[in-house]
Image (tube, rainbow, N blue to C red; front, side, top):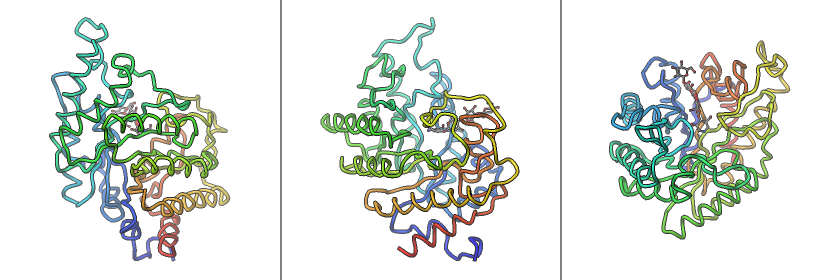
Length: 355
Ligand code: G3I
């Protein structure tokens, strides 16, 4: 029996355990890729926008918000009874230049940046109040060594920008869940840094409802034991854990520590792109084993894990085809380039039903 013949789909299989979601790209949100949106409606019960709510898109100038795509995205969620996550309010990357400078191009004061952050966060959160279940409030604020990332938010405001972001979001929608989201969360030093940051915030009265582990995984990296140690460490803080951007690359990694740092890029070389024509069975087996192991882990921790979201629908549009090496052919998701469920979908469903 293959996945197409399975009567159950992913969202039914994980009912009562955790939400299962997918990130939507602009074409899907605009209704130009109905084969993909049909997969979302059939298989998933949660969505997140891959790009259209990032600050450079939704707030391109100080006096101009562009809600055109974000409104459509949220409406798609409402119309199809999907749990909607907002991604992302405060992120150093994809933030428009105007955010940090004045008219003369000089870095703004702490007070000005705080006021801009407040306006940015509260305008967006208020607009979607009651329609968005939770927000990635702060994204990627901790370095792999556990220190604070030296972003412009950090340079101008200091670590308090994180606390303020959560306070502004909470004020705007007290009923929304608020998340901290980051990549490479298995790295022990990073885990410790995130734990220390969250503890400090909690002491200051900030509630972080969930910690998002992005989970851009490779076949061998990270070690699942390190991943589990982080999941347990985050959950022991009293936070839920969300797997927010899952994919499993089968391609060689030029730098195993690249994490999901979008600024890193490596030159294209043919030997780094080995599966343009086909994927060897041994690699497919390793890919399936890896997905099954991680889903088994999520189920083991189903009291802590409230959502598992894949970073895209089909392999065709995955960001992994262009990162960390542009122009490669990767196969990181659950649905193939021709929109068919891969055999792993059926295997994941069978594994969860046999638990
Ligand atoms: O839409 C434009 C298009 O008009 C233009 O012609 C083209 C030329 O470069 O760029 C297109 O925009 C690209 C966009 O993806 C849509 O494809 C941007 O250049 C590119 O930077 C952007 O990359 C996104 C990346 O975040 C940076 O925002 C990826 O799609 C997206 O998957 C990725 O997602 C991030 C999460 O938000 C946070 N965690 C890491 C994750 C992976 O980097």
